[in-house]
Figure 1 (cartoon, rainbow, N blue to C red):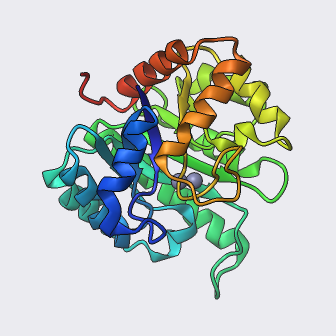
Figure 2 (cartoon, rainbow, N blue to C red; figure 1 turned 90 degrees about the vertical axis):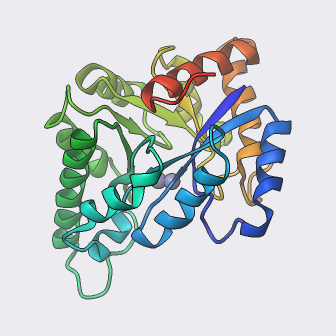
Length: 271
Ligand SMILES: [Zn+2]
Ligand SMILES: [Zn+2]
């Protein structure tokens, strides 16, 4: 029994008329629960409707992705709180800092990154108000500036809101800073299975038992041996098997600990 802690089920790449089929595929592969993440105001409703349709199986987190920071109105946090009134949220996110993608037209790079940082601060404040943890995305063209900046902002809220650095691709020293300073978590996608990402596999092998979670980030990042195909929660089993083997653990045992970690971090109803 494994939880896919990060997928985007409201993405247009998922055929919304085949929802039951994705959930059944996942269950057949041993992925019995999933958390779908809203990443912009336009997809919140669709994400919430997944959680409403599959209670106890699909959970929902809402936020604004840094790529969409320019689209966030001043009252976005009120809107999020109102949208989520009928469905208890698992976390705030996906949010974070993305210095990889080109900035929107009419923006200077430095100004847009500053806007992302302000919006991230607001997400932390909302998470603290709602008593939820936060899901962070960081990405750089080269180096790790977005990671460093997100670490600093998360540090302002340490002890109040715990972060997970999702789709973690850093080394063990970077991961250790998340654990030691922030009581944070990391979650690994199919990137851990990629032959050209040995650092990620090494971090996943080394990661302390109580800090590790699994995710697909579907519809993106299908793991080996399905790399290049559209991803879906069912594919998480390949990432789970790969990392369990790297850690010298039985799949069952590894699944149990990542599920326990996700249950605690996301405050999911225990079965
Ligand atoms: Zn992301
Ligand atoms: Zn994502």
